[in-house]
Amino acid sequence: MKQLSVRNQQRRYPVATREARTAAKVLMDELLELESYDLSILFVNESRMAQLNKTHLQHEGPTDIITFDYCTLTLLHGELVICPAVASKHAQQYSATLGRELARYIIHGVLHLRGFDDQTPAARRKMKREENRLLQKLARRFQVDSLAHG
Image (cartoon, rainbow, N blue to C red; front, side, top):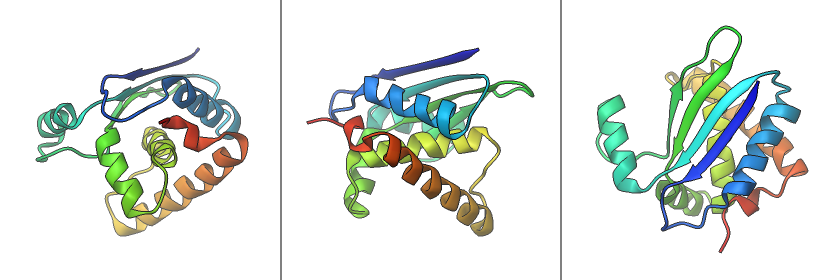
C-alpha cells in the first residue's frame, strides 16, 4: 500500500500541494525505496500549529513541524503537520527559499517516522546530515522551489 495525501489548510503562504505531493512521492519511492507507506501532510496556519503544539507537546507558540507517528512493524504511517508561516521565517533566516524549507520539513518528518530523533546534540547532528543528504538528492530530481509559488 502506498498512500499519500497533502492538504493545505492555510491561505497566507502560497503552498503548491501538487508539487509537495510529487516531492514526497520522489522521496518515499525513489530515494528511500519504501515498499509501503501511509503519509498525510497538512499545512496549517500559526494559530492552528500553536494549538497542536500546546495540546500534544505542551509547548507554547507555533513550531515549524510536528510529526505524528503511527508506524507499525511493516508500515511507515504518519502525519506531518507543517506551518508555512514558521517555515517562511526560517527560510529568511537561513537564506533559503520557502519551497526548499518546506521540502526540508517533509524530509525531516519522514526521518522521524523512520526512527531518527533530534533530542540530543549527537542525534541532531546525525539527523541533520541525513536530512541534508536527502535534500540534495531530492533537489537533483525535483525543483524543490516549486513547493511554494507566488
